[in-house]
Length: 288
Figure 1 (cartoon, rainbow, N blue to C red):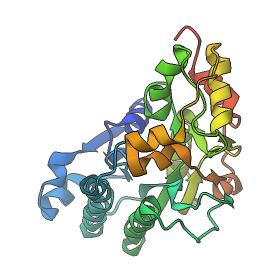
Figure 2: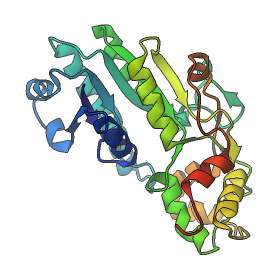
Figure 3: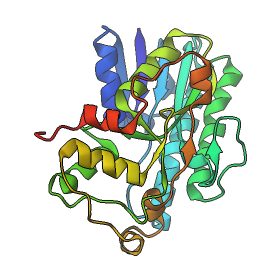
């Protein structure tokens, strides 16, 4: 199988690449240099792909200046526009296009499934709506299209969890704010398995929440980390400190969404890790 992937060098892309290559599949990586090519040359690089996976996007874990917001948006919407435009130009279309979105599309109140369409109207909410609207147009070319709305992806070697481990190992970890903010998450192994599932089964199409079926809270995550590392978690990070450091981006840590993977479960997908303590215990060991 020939898989073309954007964002292949990132945390999630690296895990997917290793999993695909272990099957003997070829992964073609599209990076910044390729996106600088003309549409015609760019399309030529995708020709012959069986599956195209879009993971491109600048990190949102940074202070959101107005200039950086433009970078966040263009790295998602602009790259997706170019990618979809190229897909439509291909003589032989891939059989599947898998693009990315995020649960930040949902409001912070309530419990959300894919059926909810009353989306958040803040920066991330509007960004996700436009991102998805751009990606789904690949359907117009007859390409089966799947969009995964990621929760917080947990892995010991990258993402949010990796950044949290050092202070927690030092006994300096603790709740953020009051700890009651929702935390919808997915273990990296389940994420990889979800990609294999949609690649293998033609019944998968449209938008899916990629989150474990049992969301928790920041308090639940903190307790799971403390238990796994055998460390106390008395230290708290006040909300105002994060706002001073991160500005508007502090909402990533101070707010959250409660999201359920209704469509994945209805499609027959089963999660290996459904409990936050089990997931953290698998990823984090005291001696790590």
